[in-house]
Length: 406
Ligand code: NAD
Ligand code: MG
Image 1 (cartoon, rainbow, N blue to C red):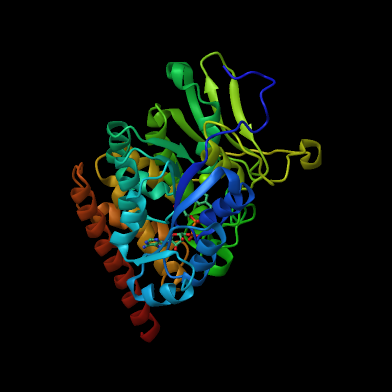
Image 2: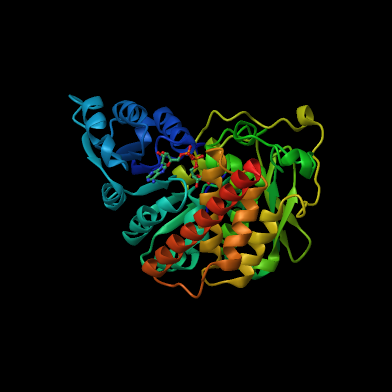
């Protein structure tokens, strides 16, 4: 047991790290912390997609050994941006996987979407400690991922704020004393709009989250509340509980990040100001802790914390996610793939906001989704679901165009 008078930041050994998705919101927050604690971390590799300018600047700033762009067409631009730096450069999806395979103590999995599945799996298979932000890889392939984590002696530390909260207050040694876990949801920017108002929501409105500054896809997921549905499935895989033991409560202030209820009626929660650097720090420093510049919580300044039941009529994504979890098999992989396609088309202006859950629901209804256990089977179902969802979007577009003509 750690002594109460032990130093505030115990001297942990220097940790070698790789950041997958370094150029995104989570990646930038991770590197912000690394820059504040240079003595604690040695950066092996950073990966990004198209924003090679940012990737190159990050690699120079933290002295990374390798920078990888997932987009092969950006190889030349990245090479030029890093010329004279001594940073090795690579490009392509396989190079991202190879970066994850490099022997480091710790990996941040912060690629958005199922694109993060193979690299995260690669880090798991070499037994790394993984800070997991990329929830989609658990929604798509949770059983496979968790089995590989156990088989290969890897460690998964959740970065999603709700799961980080539960991780911090869950008594893993006495899991049978946990009665339920409660995920809090901000309710997103459209919590108090009615359905008619939600129909005309624009991509710009949907990506402007009231409490958190995040990437475009997760911001839209928060607005449809699919994010909470994905998190329900994520929690099911991360913690030893049944689906029925996980509940969701809307808490617009995002101060209580989640709660665990024990069989004696005790409820343990983790609180903090909404700043992703706190849960990222929990994962980066685990099993120790590290100082962050996150604003400190002053409850008297906040005054009131409020709670309400989620509205599954306005936010059908919650129901779809719960049904997919109950259905089991590859249903959650279909849910995830269809949602990625629908969000992509919404952001491109091709479908309306309310069509996002509608596309997901229709894809779940028509797409073949038997059991999927191997990575190849999961990827095949993911591909088929993307094809179905794309077809549904296209049919809706043609119908709309013909109505406009008619
Ligand atoms: P983001 O869009 O800001 O960043 C995504 C990162 O993934 C970027 O570095 C991008 O270059 C990279 N990327 C995109 N497509 C890729 C591809 N095909 N191959 C390789 N790399 C690719 O997203 P974000 O907000 O940082 O979220 C990242 C993940 O973390 C998501 O799964 C999200 O659900 C999760 N998450 C984010 C937050 C948050 O506050 N931003 C909170 C909880 C969980
Ligand atoms: Mg979250």
